[in-house]
Image 1 (cartoon, rainbow, N blue to C red):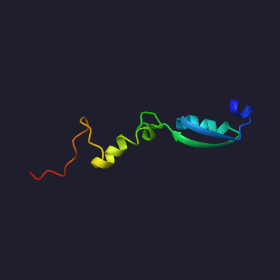
Image 2: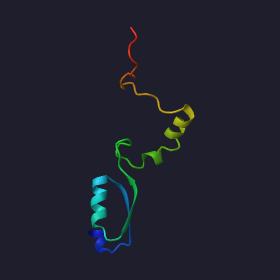
Image 3: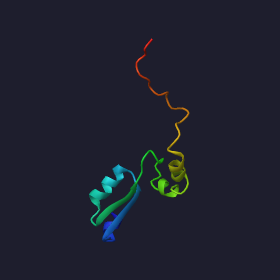
Image 4: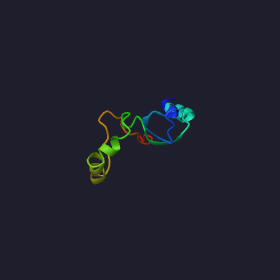
Length: 82
């Protein structure tokens, strides 16, 4: 592994998926930490919340939360009384 050959003392992982994180952690000889990982919520863009913190998330806080998607299923209702 390139970083092992360079004898790095400390590695910071940024944006790897959990499987690749695990492989890196298994084989890395230097101490390692994970800064951000990919996920489906952010479209595999681990820093999207940081990039949009001053726009999208501030608006959500001001407006009281996210709006429901138009293609989401209708909410379930209790048992019918008819």
